[in-house]
Image (cartoon, rainbow, N blue to C red; front, side, top):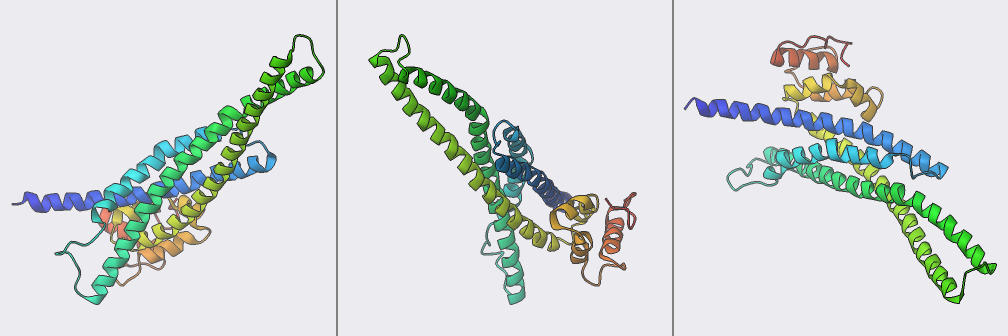
Amino acid sequence: MAKEPQRGKFEERRRKEQVAFLVVKFLRMYVSFKDIAAEFHARTAAGSLGGGGLFEKVAGLAQSIGFDLKELAHSLFRAQNGYGAAARPRGTREALTGMKSLLEKRTLDSYIGTGYHLLLILQESLYQIERYSPALDREKDEIGRIMDMARAGGPGLGFDQREELERLQALDEISAKLAVDSAELAQVVLRRCEELLEGTARVIRRFGASANENEILVLNLLQHTDLIEKVYGAGSVEAIFSELTAGSGYKGRTGLDRAIAFVRARCGNISGLEPGKAS
């Protein structure tokens, strides 16, 4: 009989770890994608979107952090996407809290899953641009040169050959339109990814605040305050730890002090996380 409580504790700790991993991985995802988006916009403005290695960067992000996030979100939230009859809360406050938690989890699962699939679409669009656009430019130049020869009555070009060249030029125009469409699709998808990323960041913050009894999450956030600042802006570290440690059960002058005291009491050795030194 003693195995059941131990199993319950193990599962609880495992879930806390997964929540912490999900939040920190999202912060990393946000920062990495913002760097990619900045380069995308700069290259678009300069008219040099192809050939810059953006495809490899997006593919690497999708296949590593993006995939891990999707799998974590599905594992954490999809099995809990509703109330069973026995689990339905009875009191109004309990029902409101439960519904808020349910909506946060469902939204996170949807946002993260959608973001992953949008990354794959962006990856494919950039592949089309980077792999085919340079070749299309070279072919267009060559077709233009041959057409100039044909119009000038160059030697060895009969009527049938000129018809073939005109058909080739028509195909070239279709290829050029496909290249333009790929670039336009990449811009649309990138903007959608940026919007989704910002929305997910807001939900992640609310979700994190409701997981304030998760010492593993608080510890991981203390170890990555640089990511918090990059995602949520200057002053966000103190604000977020104040949200996480609100209530009479936490001791300390600032949110950061209370967070460190909380993980010290729950986790034991936290060397390197003294007040003012978390990074």
